[in-house]
Length: 275
Image (tube, rainbow, N blue to C red; front, side, top):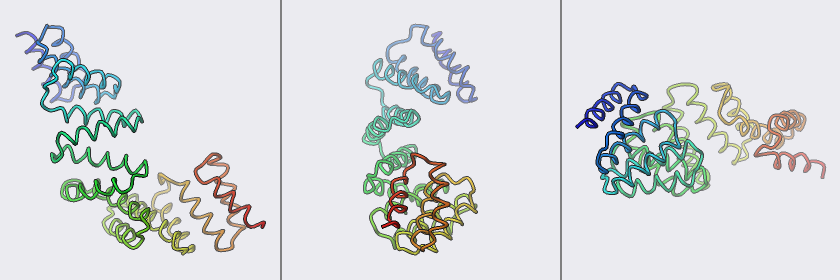
């Protein structure tokens, strides 16, 4: 059949990572009057092409079409995982969670699903569901240790903070130290130092917290959360009685982050010394 040759050509383009040509061939196959089942498969495969092209709204439409044309599609976990990743890119966290959970209910143990578990864990963490996040990070840790060390180190970072927010500081400290020991470069080392800075601050070891924050920026001048590094440093100087240095950090943070996450706490510290 003519559409079958178009479909074969589309898959050849996919193997060559020529996604634009693949898309054209898939759309040609759709125009050649395939059966509903075949349409379902074509739309399912098109959804991956759209994702590669970052055409996220088209991903959603393609998945809907795949399921409408062929409700018995066997690998629905693949489609729901793709939807979950798509909604992640669109910053629609709730829909991302719903689709990743649905995917994992259908299939849990394959290699691809380990990445779904990881992304779902990060979403739980982002929304302060630390217990649920911790369970999933523990579940995927062994897989990533064996297969993707970069993901494993990232898992350690999140696990360290899961224990930190549970106020299990000793366990948190061990995990951040393990991250430091296994860090392959300065950028990854900075993430472990960042976690240890939180712990030092929580323990009121303010000089140590300052030193750790300085080590973070020394290892990674473009660290992803300089706002927090600045706050921990400023607050530590305040508690050490170095209000002159605190004032400098206070002014810098207010200028750089006028509506930042720590502006209320900074103002409270500044006001408290007057009382």
